[in-house]
Length: 466
Image 1 (cartoon, rainbow, N blue to C red):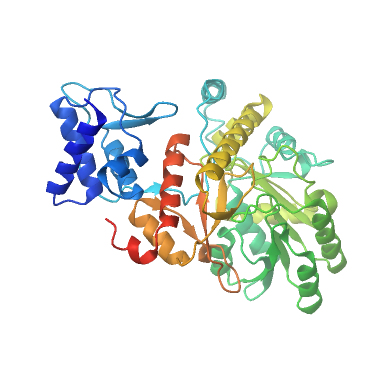
Image 2 (cartoon, rainbow, N blue to C red):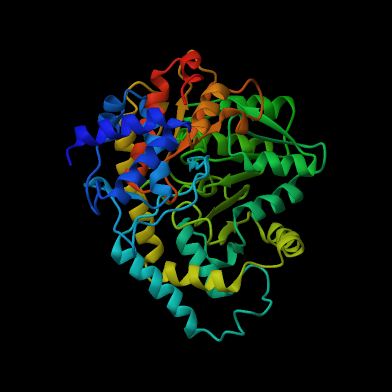
């Protein structure tokens, strides 16, 4: 059946329906499949072609395809476009019709490469757990990990001169940050950080009654002069810094700024919390601040941004054994220990190269998605980095960031407004868009097209679009 006849039939069905246009599109696809007008593997019109044929905006059509895919009627396949799914039993899989399916670009998760060799390595790692004494992995263990696990952590961190004796194995970076904030500051004390920064520390500070002071930053990250001025005027208890691919702005501190921050911290005796969650992504990142001021720096990194957030294992180095003991005591109280099962898996994947292979695959997929974003978001103003899997999108005028995010959410796309990341001063007119997670590259592209389409619309017009 020709696409013109198909589109004409759908126009009639949509006009006759009392349901929202995107639901009516999915209904029309379902009816055509049941009637035999559409068959398994048949390619559907592109989103832009269908939007033109139906005289609907791109966002509505994209949402209709997303609803049809959610019901199990169609699939988006890289290199093949959108096609009808294989029949199951007497007909296609149909799911209950519910509105509000969200394409989540809010959580900053790495993309999930489907490379067969990498997936095979994952499976081998899971299977290797059978080699362990099951009860050994189910017992309480001394906090900080076994010597073998600490040595593996030291190899993963790649900090020159840091061996396993200076590494603590922790149940995720967030738990380590909680312990650090508890040890370094008391209620009412000040910790400095970027003015726009990782939101996880905002929650920790609020819970502990600690005051965060946001320091100005630009495309190269935190301003060392502002840090120096704060230290001279009102000495903070610590500096928190997210030095590589800062979440959310993607800025990376160059070596000169890292050296300046280390020198200022040394001059005033200010401890540095270096949360380097994204350090595994660039091929040649600048040296860690921990290598420039090891006597002051607590260095943190883990696997959430190169393997996945479910591997709740992170590694922390401390300036001296006194801090190691204090932090071990706090972490033992709040988290008991890192899971021996997950830690064994992490050690295996570091030792056999799976962790490094996963980081390479995430880097390659992130670069592909960044190129996709650059090709689709032609009217958008945003900053990013080729190795990042998120971007910082300036809200297009005359939208406000709240209006823009609300409009996108109403059309099934979730992004995060700048307020979430802002520590001090007015929030910038911007949103963070994650390009990773479980979405395929094709799905990521469709979602970026929806964002580009929203940029073309005026708020007053968008509010009247179904």
